[in-house]
View 1 (cartoon, rainbow, N blue to C red):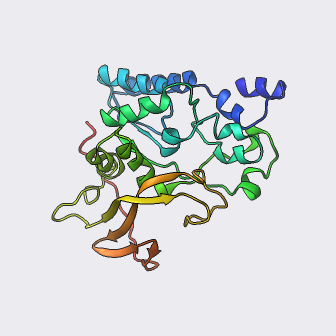
View 2: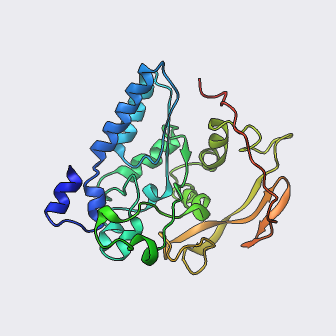
Length: 273
């Protein structure tokens, strides 16, 4: 209904993707999902792409009632905003249309999400990596927010973007590793992943915490004609990546061979009661 009302009033710019999906509705959806999970015998519930203070409060309240609920957020909700990014208008604002939508910088969503990560109200930072090229895909159907495919690319810089929370003092280095690696492996039943311990898969990231870099489409490795974080100056950078003890990335170069990967069968997580 809100989408239809906005279009009827001629409000079709990218920012109305967010304005027609207010945080109150995100919170209502989280609340409803929590109620249904409890009615279904307290089934485990995982909330994806949480973007607002309102929705986070529902997660916290559901947990206080004993609901078996976990939630994630994404880097775009920690760094980008309705005003600065969706508010760019056409064409560039289309790059930032994603779901859930970016929230207003004038509220305290980002501060609350960082705090939620710090105190384990949010368990994971994922990416919801869903890239669309701007000209060929995002704008292919015209300039109206309701016809733009939803999604932001950013899988390459997830570790870097979350590390900015360490730099700013929002979270500890240990918590950074937890939300990016250990918790996802634990929650999704991948016991061989997410930690450095004898008998596990020897997947290791060597990270330089003092390196400086500027994020840009000109230097990223994603097949995408823009960067959602264009021009962002950050501290910290992945230097080396090992998979099963084998170096597959070093100093920005990929050394992995096609076909070396294997399918990982998930188990039921022992941490979901």
